[in-house]
Length: 58
Image (cartoon, rainbow, N blue to C red):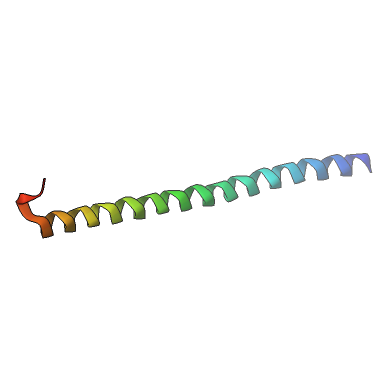
């Protein structure tokens, strides 16, 4: 009985560790995608600004 409780505790610790790794991985990938989209949009806007204003832009 005590051995079963200990193995259940170890199993729960391993499963929770894997769950947190997956959860934080998803969060980090989401932040990376958000940053990529933000920078891409800023570059697109800057390019459009430069095209519309031409070389007379200061």
